[in-house]
Length: 338
Image (cartoon, rainbow, N blue to C red; front, side, top):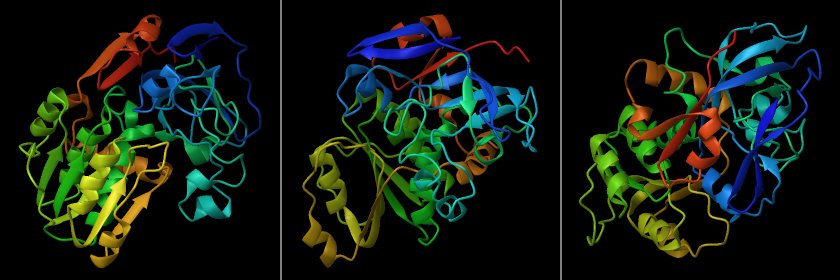
């Protein structure tokens, strides 16, 4: 098979690799048919992260099931499934508590497409081993476009969790999304509206993302304005320290900030000001498995439209060139074989 490998800064190539084999009776082999670029991927390709090449790229996809182990009960060959970014067993204490990103059965941060907890392959590859098939893989509802939900593995579900958890306890909430990454901010606008926000504003100077946020239902006329401290929820999808700080200072008393933009260095935050207003700040790798079914339902019912995030859809042979372009999303597709 072929894997899409990051070989060095700015260097992407298809590389021949041995076909993976079923590791245990609980595992499955899948073939990605719609793989999306995560907001982190371009930094991984550029070599601006702590993760050093070579490694296989990709941690968002819909795949077809090729083969399942004898202990797999919920899947069969030909099923279309969302493949979560995080390797997780589904049965350890952390997984049972809904914290699959902290699974204790595998190395810390074991994941596809990032060599943080070992090398598990990438979801742009022609074939991928899923070690805990029943626990990890989420079947797609009939009739749902795999391209539309290719990001349910990570970004799309991350945006839903960032919006829906705080909004579950806040009625008529005002939401501010601080954009800055390729797609998460616009997806967060859609998910905040789907979760019942009374209003959503979007802060970002990027013209295309502003346009997409406006089409998703956000107010975007915030440039140069002083933000009043009246937002019940701020979703920070930025890598910029000052933009994060501006969002934190816009929180109303008792407000919540969901930080979903990965920042590798340590930003200065207004901790005492936050203390005086009794605000909360959440940050961390999203445990997506348990939330993917809800996200698939939201897309299926038309409550959100991930394809609005201006994806470029290309064939697998064009992936090395397409993935280095400065777009919001790139989706790599293959024909089904099952």
